[in-house]
Amino acid sequence: MQSHGVVIARALSQRVTTADGTLAILSEVELTVKAGETLAITGASGSGKSTLLGLLAGLDQPSAGEIMLLGQRLGDLDEDARARLRAGRIGFVFQSFQLLPALSALENILLPLELAGRADARERAAHWLDRVGLAARAAHTPRQLSGGEQQRVALARAFATDPEIVFADEPTGNLDADTGARIIELLFELNASAHTTLILVTHDEALAARCQRRLHLVAGQMREAALA
Image (cartoon, rainbow, N blue to C red):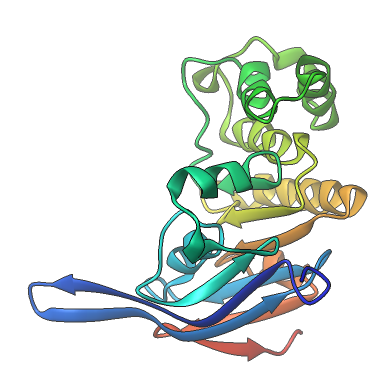
């Protein structure tokens, strides 16, 4: 199955009920992502980018259609089974960093490694903190780190488990241009060395341009976008 795609969406739709009726966020999205591919999903605010990312990763369930993630049909799995599928095999990077505030930088990286049952969890966490240039910040909590440093910790956390896929939701969205540019460089450096499939949603043209392929969402519908 994975030779055909590590992520496959077929006729994927997402609708929500509002006071004014039913709102279609995504309509009949078709998508196949191959192992090792880097894909940018772009579109205006409200076009459904983050909704699509959450569905592809199994964080939410669609109104209609099906998703295959790493050879598993997500519709056949309950929430616990989807979480087990993601553990150690899927990494996430979010616009808001999503670091646990009570944990140190090292502990934030350590947590998914421990959840994945890695015997070498602490050693790997320290290695990845060093990879992103923050070994000296190991004991610092998120509030003691700058935005760029927090996103470096988030990148280390995402890649530390040797995931097959990393999903990134506006990874430079909360950063200034210079910091965002450094995070882009680091993201693609880590991704290239790990040979990970990278699927990201972004408003950042510089970030989208680094991907091998770009898809554009317009009013919940997918269009293949020509690369510059």
